[in-house]
Length: 144
Image (cartoon, rainbow, N blue to C red; front, side, top):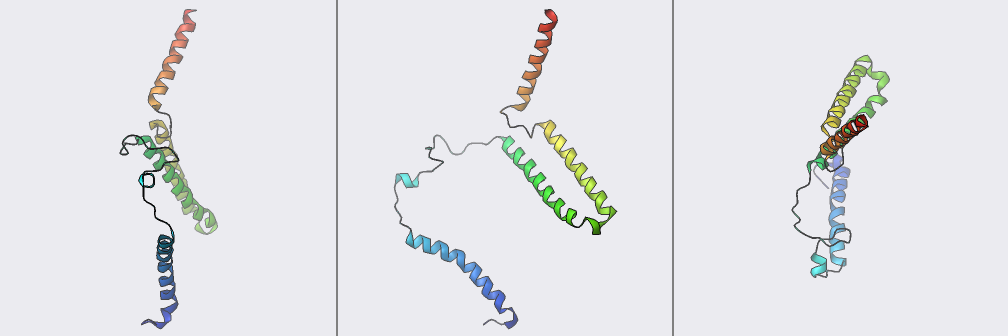
């Protein structure tokens, strides 16, 4: 079939795996009805009609939270192969993982202190208000 006969099964598998998605989309495109109208062309977001401009800025805390999650998730996945091969790797790999875990702890503490793990609207303002209320409460108690 192809120039290199020993790789025929690979090329057949490659052609089939590439053609299946194209066939699935093209068959559904031919079979599915196409009715265009204002309701079909409108954006759909969980049954609520969109209001206002769609080009809004998301606050940075979403990206901070997502990046902290992604980093911790990738590091957790990288620890699994180490745990499987722990006996064969020896003391050097154990020290490397301890250093990795210490770096993760330092990074988590840094993210926590910077407020990257806070999900409230204004984490720093709420902490300051709570401290002010606590101080006012102490002053109020000392006056009585």
